[in-house]
Image (cartoon, rainbow, N blue to C red; front, side):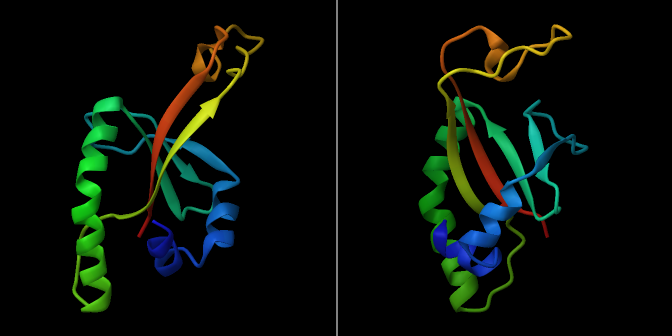
Amino acid sequence: FAALRALHCGGERAFVESLGCSESWAPSGGKSGASFARTSDGRFVLKALSARELQGALSLLPAYFEHMARVHFEALPSVLVRMVGLFKLELAQPLAASAQGGAGIGGGSGGAASASLLLAALV
């Protein structure tokens, strides 16, 4: 993913700065019920992956990287999404529920919480 970020994100620093602020996003047409967020600068979308989706993504990555290398080095067109990262976010202590009684990240019930996130460049 670092090579793809170098090509499509302006480097690691610009990538990390974009991730500094994001907002919940509800794209139309999705059927998975997954949570999405979009960086405030509109450069990236984050998708929370279920365990099944994570395993599927991991199995596809070798072929994806091979394809994207060919796209770059052979100047081929591609309509595939520009994935730029796959991360596991872990919170040792989930954020507490809000004062209004809403559940925080991880449900606010104590214990660890984690999420697998796929990041893609918005074109």
